[in-house]
Amino acid sequence: MSRRRRVYEGKAKVLYEGPEPGTLVQYFKDDTTAFNNQKKATITGKGVLNNRISEYLMTRLNDIGIPTHFVRRLNMREQLIKEVEIIPLEVVVRNVAAGSLSKRLGVAEGTQLPRSIIEFYLKSDELGDPMVTEEHITAFGWSNTHELDELMHLALRVNDFLSGLFLGIGIRLVDFKLEFGRYWHGDEMRIMLADEISPDSCRLWDIQTNERMDKDRFRRDLGNVAEAYQEVARRLGILPESGPRDMPGPSTMQ
Image (cartoon, rainbow, N blue to C red):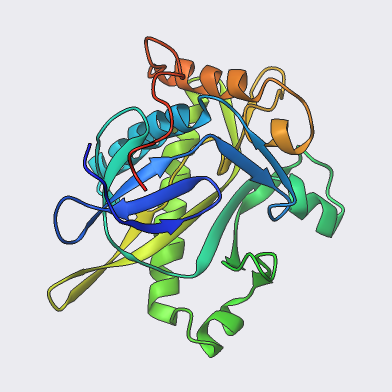
C-alpha cells in the first residue's frame, strides 16, 4: 500500500487523500471517546464494524435518492468518499427522549416524542459542540436558510427510512446525528450526507428489552460495547464472516 497524505484526523476516523481528485479515503479507527473527549478507550474491531454498517446504510440511502459522499468500501477499515466542504453543524434527529434532551427538559428517558425533533449543534470540540438555533446559524454565516431547509428535509427523509429499516430488525431508532457537506461539481453545488451512520452516531435500543446497542454502552460503562455493535451488524446481515478483527491499523499510512 502506497503512503497517502493525511488530510484530517478526528476522534474516530482519519481522512487521507484519495486516488483521484475530488476523493478521499476514510479510515475507521478503533478509538472511542465520550463527553467531549474526556473519556477515551480502544475497542478492538469497532472500526471494522462501523465501516461495514455505515457502508450498508449509506448505500441504502443512495439507492432511495438521498445523496451521500459514500462511493465504495475499499477494505475492512477504509472507504472511498467524495470530498465535500463540511457544513460546521451536527444535525440531531430525536424520536424518543434520551441523553441530553432528557437532562435539559426533564423528560424521562424512553418517552416517545410527539413528533421527531431536529436540533442543531455547532461542530466545535473547543466549545463542547454547543446547541445553536437557526438564528445563530444564519447570523454567523455557518449556513443559510435555503441550506437549512435542505438539511432538515434530508434529515427527516433519512429518519423515515432508517426508522423503518431498524424496526424491521427489532431495533428502535431513538436518535442520531448527521453531518452534511457541500459537494462542488464545476459551478454547481449539492448538499450531501457525509461522515458516517453507525452505532457511534445513533442511539439504538432493542425493541423488546430496551437494551442499548450503541455508544451509550461505553458512555455509561455498561460493557460489551463491541458485542452490541456486532449484534447490530448481525441483524443487518453484514457481520464480517471472519469477525471484526481482520485488519490492524494502517501502519504504512503516515
